[in-house]
Length: 458
Image (cartoon, rainbow, N blue to C red; front, top):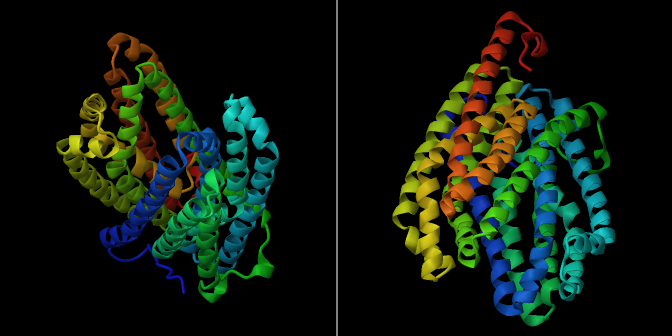
């Protein structure tokens, strides 16, 4: 049985740490089998296969990111209802979440299968790559219903305080992915399609385990197939929270595409250096994200219980823990930077460029904790529009303007790298400002028995 955990009571620090560790391990497993895909494609299929996969990567990233936002929406709604102890409404929310991922996954699957050739022509995919890229994208799109089932189902389980069951499902899916990669590529010689089939099978296993865990929830809100349906009021709330969260993911992807445009102007070594940088960065980034996801579930449950004081304490503890971890991992990465970069690229020029990047950005990573943890705390409280606008202003618009000014001014990669800590700091200040205003008014609303809108929280 999936183990539901009440985050509204007990030792805050202990609960957040125990919740965050499986989240971090789950992210590491995801990164590990993504890396295995790249290793198989790059070493056994050649650069044409890798390019065929790469041609679809931006579309897949955008679609998965957007539906990741819908997963946030479902998770926040479920956590708040659980915190409010409304078991009948919680039952409807669980079944609504499954209905959403089935309907959305099937819709995106059909659109992807039908329009894959059109999309690849629109982005000017080389003619010689189109056949392989179309086949890969169509097979990958077949996995979207089960991919969304895992993502949204896991979001529901985490909202109920269970971060271990999604880890087990992810781990099982990862093992299947590695085995299927070998089977389809080395045994069946299925080429680039084999990578996509491996993804489909591995995601199906993860989704099946997640559905099983949802069907083993406590009886009042356990998943039953015949009760999977949309509930209008709950769906409306999921969309209200999920769409801005999904749009924020798209905005961040767009900002990375713009940054890549400027990086590309410095040539092959710089491109390789930033590619390696984004891999090395995961050492610091993934623990921060794990703490952010933990505080989102924590805040959602406490918001349902209207315990704003506990949300504030939890956010402070989570922020302190994440900044401590970020400081330690940043220091370790700076000290061993050359060794880390050598794992991904042994070219001396690439390593030198990579080290120049991390010296600019890594010392400031504790600042990033503020925008991640505080932003996720707000999202857990159902406040997603404001964090989205803050991210859009700073991470996308201001970063783009800074790139346009600093890159020509410095004429070096440092001009790109320095935009990251600057925009992190600006985003953190804005996010913290809204957080203070929100909690001041939220606690006043509880004190005087007002609704949020009456307390001018918006």
